Length: 155
Image (cartoon, rainbow, N blue to C red; front, top):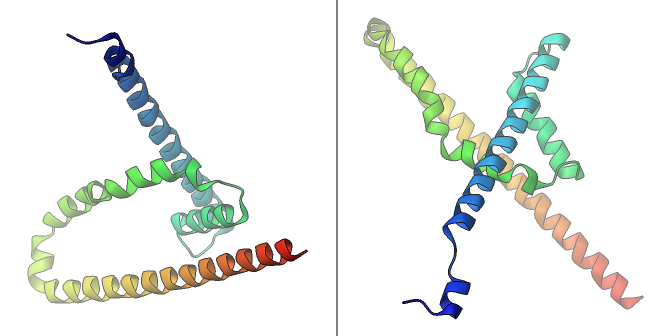
């Protein structure tokens, strides 16, 4: 038997479904916005004949928008988190396609493995460098905010 007070504070099933639906909608909209940014960047790369992939241009544009305040991180966080958590699924078609080329792997497998390992190491080094630079920038910005706050409190 539930008391009136317990019933008042118990979460309703309807509230849980509405919250879950809102979360799914937010993820869908944010993922669509990120995909839309990629489509626009890919179109720009094709029109301008740039030698870089559209995804790279899209990420640079997104980074610039995040840094300048044009986009708040909360506007893309849920969609980006979902895409990153399910990223392994995006590689399944490539793995299935690789199975079709068994002869290639038997003949040149060691070269392919060398390229994959070398490419992975280069990506890891580049990401480590980028993370280090971002952390330094974040520390500098935090220090600048502290200095401005101290200066403002003295005045």
